[in-house]
Image (tube, rainbow, N blue to C red; front, top):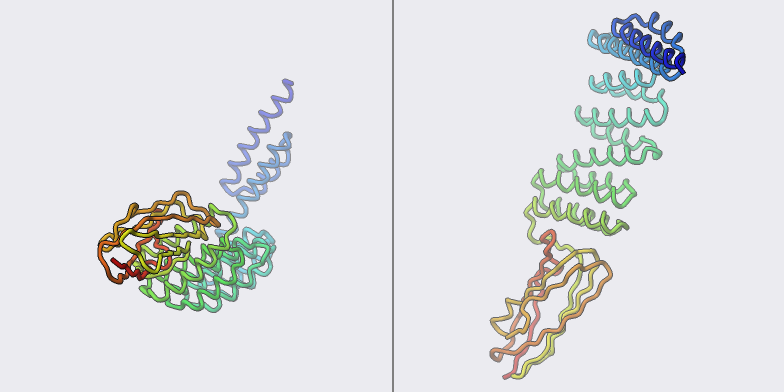
Length: 348
């Protein structure tokens, strides 16, 4: 046991010496010393640090070569290294310099997963130099095996298009994201970007697609969060007349109501989890006496149907157009239609 402890302590000491040699660039000596470390795990860690050190130095050299205009030589040196970290570094240098074609050629030599990250970086760089068409083409070339990276890259490009006022093209890109939750997120981001551009009609168009995508989210919690995000878009954009179909309400009134009064029947069908809701009938009080001017519903979930009855008595004869105000206590959205009107004939 004592010999093993001594061996381990000795390995740690030599590992520290390897670190010191790497820091001063004496990689050959560091490698020879690391190979002699007896403890296997310590030896592997020391050798890994040598590799990391040489990679860091090589990346620095590549940066210097690019700074002095030796692009071709830098690419050649990077390709010889056969190290994906070095290849990704030269891809970034080329993309940042606006040399997109050269960056793409290097990226093609990388393993698919690293290549996809490189393509995403190049796509972002293409946007910065105004090459939107090329950026879209590059984003579409990201492998479906990297689905998350692909949709996030498409989302970023869709936002850029929306900011430039190209709403149709942004919607086309969003449509390429097949997962409902991800597509709803992309469309929400596009809607926010369109809001920043001041295009209210464009925001409304995007919201229609976004609500359609959100309704297809199977997980009820994720669907609720998606709807709340869209509610924030509506509030931010200051839109007052956007129809949000989260539920529908039917009012059934008797054709005529005599002095003794009658009965209002309200039916509510909920399409989404919308939490609590209140139906305000106070605007009717000018014409009718109601036993419950405000009806409240709690924890309304998708698929739920509710029916309520309210007694009504006329205050005077005539034909009235009676409005009804419906509000959601969560997210501040109104149901569609926001202000349905019902005509009621009262006979005294």
